[in-house]
Length: 293
Image 1 (cartoon, one colour):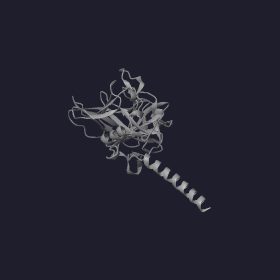
Image 2 (tube, one colour):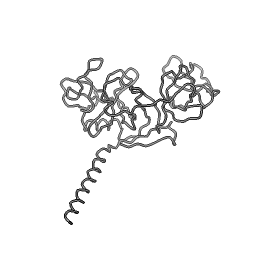
Image 3 (cartoon, rainbow, N blue to C red):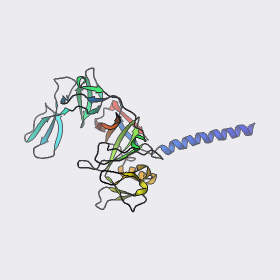
Image 4 (cartoon, helix red, strand yellow):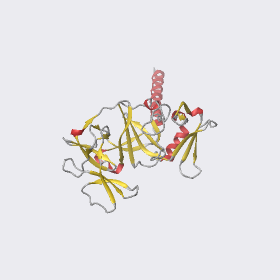
């Protein structure tokens, strides 16, 4: 009887240890600050005013640019106008999505480039989302950027991580993020440029010759059979390998530096849409949460 109990205890211990080691293996040291996720709204009309406070008489949001320059920002209509600057009203367009950060009976509070703005509930409605899964992000799509890609990792130690190539005319590098509660939360941007080489078998991360950023070179063994609009084989992020992806996390600072901003995507009617792009300092303290992977 004692031997039987001993064997049972050993088996139980090994089972618990197995669960513990599995849990620890999935903890990759990636810690993020993000807003609590509540309602998501869409604008139902074009040209909707964004107000500084939840009332129709509050100052409107405006777009201001220093004349003949690209130096532009958002401000409010009651701010002192600067000489040599151009001002134009900023309004929300129909079909735009926002994450609600505060609410009154008649108004939704949202964030736009670091400013909290209010939109009347007359011109917005709540939307429902479909949870994003690692398998969702295995399907190729554009995800709001120029190149077709399948950015999610669906197997292995880094299952649930997402690496989205955003390099384009007005954007740069790759966003690193993770699926959380059915949303994709991006927190770090790294100057990383994936490129396909027919001669390369194993994905390799190297510093660029200019000293700025990183090149991720991959071959057929780490690509999908599908190509993008430029004829380049699409990177299969599942085949980057744990070692290389760990290096990507390291150079992005995702496991060593606190995130300064957060960009959140949701699956709305089968399309992955951005619902928030917020600086951490602009998230109200009572609305912040810390998530660790």
